[in-house]
Image (cartoon, rainbow, N blue to C red; front, side):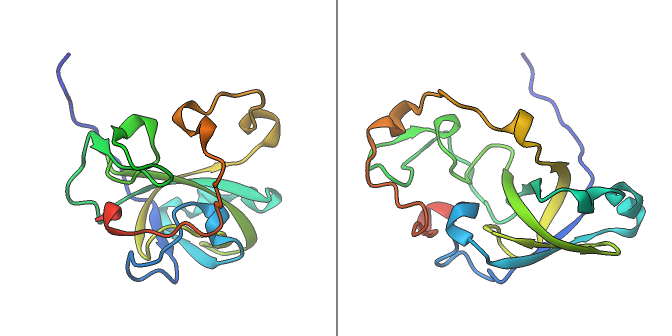
Length: 163
């Protein structure tokens, strides 16, 4: 199978208080109540119609500061290498991030959000409404994470693994 190229349009930017990777939360649960703003480009403004009726949205964005993708990484909560696709490490081949955030309000082309765990000015690629009837899963397996008992998700912060 040959590798190909996909071209994606940036639909906006995500504004957050995280100007550097240092001590940035690594998941939305670790960024509880941290505010950010999505600024959607004017040509995509009409796509926001009816979004204010949702409490949460899922953002797909580019991890634009990743310089060297890796296929094996040492993830948080472990000391041994794992395959990149068995982790949530940002050093992914396609440099894509995904986060579910809470909507505070919508004003024009801006969505004010909570629980931001991405670096300031992350290029936004897509927005999807979170729908609990479809997006929640129960009775799942946790793979290598199943034996992790110290999973204080609220205190994990970024470190050199993010560069």
